[in-house]
Length: 84
Image 1 (cartoon, rainbow, N blue to C red):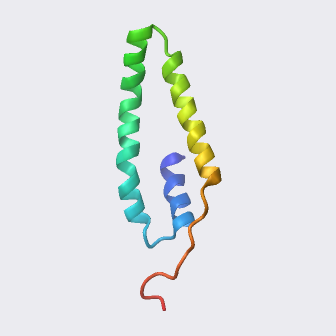
Image 2: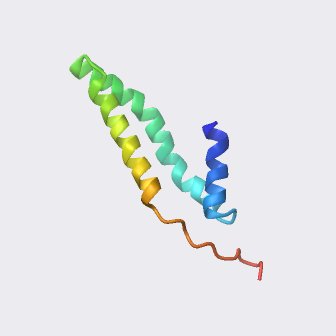
Image 3: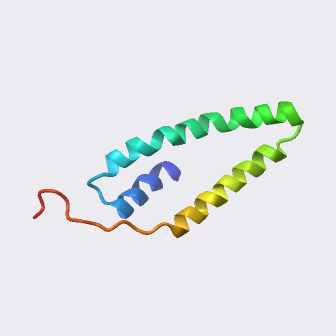
């Protein structure tokens, strides 16, 4: 559902005018996190023989993101260029 819902949420939140630019800016961060998360967890397991620290960090980052989503103000929507 994430691949389908994310563009819809971004478009509803920011509007269609800048949807491509926002996706282009955000996606590299998501790709690095998706690729680096398992590698980081593997290194943490090798170092500590437990996934607890890695997973605790992941949960903390998710919670921090959730707080940010709840706190951030919705942007003011302006008319798209050329629509009058």
